[in-house]
Length: 528
Image 1 (cartoon, rainbow, N blue to C red):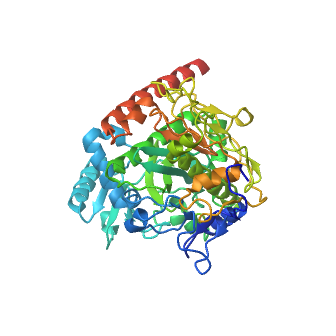
Image 2 (image 1 turned 60 degrees about the horizontal axis):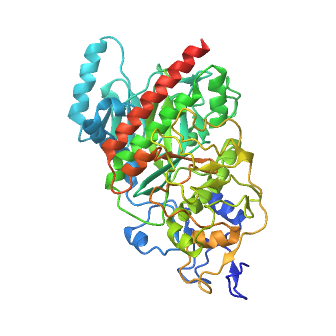
Image 3 (image 1 turned 90 degrees about the vertical axis):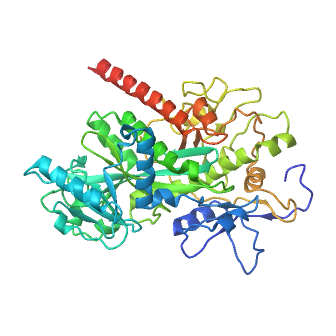
């Protein structure tokens, strides 16, 4: 017990609240970390720290959230995760800032509103292609897991009843052993005001279980990569060329495969980062402010045979079921690191109170040991007192900005993620978390009536909670396998603080894109 805590203060675990939709892996990981499950019969209705569920929260629930509580959804994010709303927002950005910037979205029509536009485009393309077939895919706006999807080349086969989108079907996907695949990339938005986006450096690659064949558009096992569909296929358990059995890889394995074919995986990862930033940016100005919440999203990205990433959709409450070894290795660590990121973000919100309580102490640092996880954690430290800049103007950290733990260079590199020297795509399987002693914190009501989650977590871990209260302070670039991708330099940090200057942010992104492409071209020339 710390010296400033009164004798006899009771200790209680951190408390998580669930409903019938909360994934089992989330509950399992939180229990493993030493949290306890909220019991409505035994506890006060306010005595919980984290409420995690699949469905969204009402705005009233966000307004009434207490300082020590956190919700796993942010209001307004369904504008990204409903397929029709996503298309409308991205098309709006195309009109404002130019189609080339948002060319990662296939040509899209929202039905039934755009039906006449689609018919005109269909016959126009048919006339241009003459005897060649054009291919389209129709997806219900609100359904998931591949339900209701139709792929067609003849408009006579188009059938829809409710709101849906029709997109140009990507006919040249990157094939692995002649099997189609897409990437599930996890993204966590810890706030929209200011906008703060983290990308997860590990993820999943989902495969179709039958060989890609445009001659048979009705074969879902050849054209759809949803694991919920492919698990029921006859070829799921079979050893497939290159892919092996099952229908999933980790991103680590996928990028290793690409490197074996001399693919610039870093450049591809940078392109995916830009897709994520530009997509979230499309809704950010209209999202209402809400404190003490975050949003974990699943971006589905298809890579074509020219190594161009295409955005297929964004998933709300991405699936967290553990159906294979790849799921276990990725999703358990994902939840662990999401909790770490939540703590890190809460540190940011508590910086002024913490510094007033411990003026002059060193900068923030995460404890090297989480007793709830039982393994070493990446060590983050933020700007030290007196540091005036966390990012330099060109997108790299300032001299006295974020520092990293030398023991774990793979997961804690002090570079800005979108620079050429950024943290690379995953190169090895993450270690599995091991359960250990229960983490504990001071009782919510007995000592500090309005203690926040991170204040409690900080006492439990022995964290130093002083953050430099300077206006130039920004979130650290990494928490576990989560890496900060926005803001990515001082200019974008400034452009997202007081309101959101989207035009300035896009200008900075375009400058960085040009720089990255030039550097990639130079390195390619050197290799030759």
